[in-house]
Length: 191
Image (cartoon, rainbow, N blue to C red; front, side, top):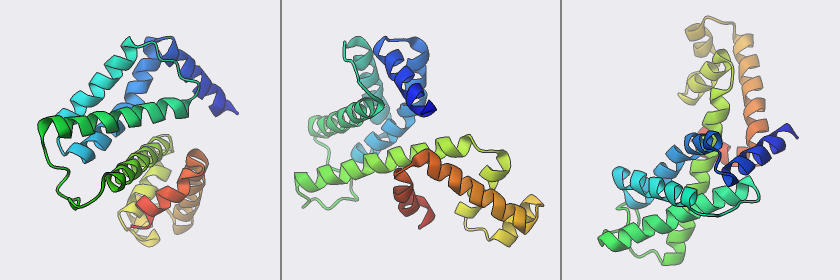
């Protein structure tokens, strides 16, 4: 329930152009939106310009959002559209990793999945940053492929302590990500 109140306060701050909440918006979304755009156009500098222009346009607009999902959808859809406009205007080819025979519908599905992936990973790293340093270290070492015994030796803690930190960290991440935890498992833990 507390999280809902924080989201409501955040959206109210965004709608009223409160600079504190706009700094929060920037710190929570800017990097993820730039990464999303960069995956579409394969140009980091242009991606940063696209995202910056969207945020400035939003600040200058009179748009009002009802909830966090509306804001997030607007931002990702705007980045998607402006990134495609960049490709069209610059007459660049779509990312070399994509087969040029993909239809527009397939490309749109691909870019939507990239946006979801980026958002879930962003949430994961925010959850990771809010953990205790021991839990964070255990998760990072686990992601690097270290065994429980190896983590125990590297951190100079018992095997049972590693297991406890790991279990608590996973439960915390699961609570923070909610339904997105399943997607995170596919993206990070099952690589």
